[in-house]
Length: 204
Image 1: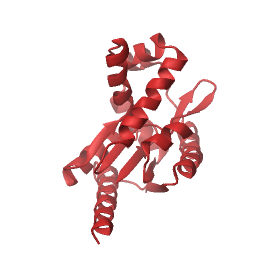
Image 2: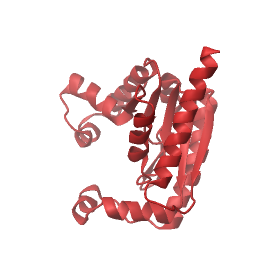
Image 3: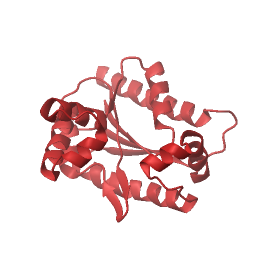
Image 4: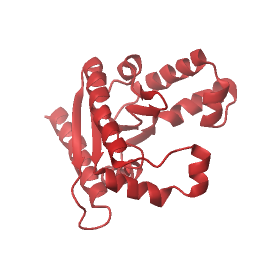
């Protein structure tokens, strides 16, 4: 089963994927941006993502984006693809899963993780120092900003799923945690169960 996993930045997606890996050791975790960077290194000698965006022409960047999607689409077994369904830019929201990209990746499911915006802000503040904020230029967003991006994620995911002819699943993690990492544990268990049920369906 091939799953595209998306969330707003700072939601804790990496922690969730690590927990899924512990529950389903054979699952492949693939970061879409890392695959693009591998191709850029081979083709142009580029060593980091910033250079990939700054040095390459739009046509070259787009070609790498499509080649990465094709490479991911050829993977077999259980695969979780770490990417973004929307990318927040100064002018609005850019699609992280353009139609030709999602077609090539061939996912069976797009999973959206949704959070209480205040939890996202709290996690971001723990992770982002003043220096990293200055370097990345990321503004401290309001709860309304984060909620809007989560809403946009739904629209963009639905459009991508329509083209890929796959399922959209929303995992609601807005509840108040009774212990640390409860959100991550719940999401990881749901995803592990989905992978397990898919294998059973194929077997039978």
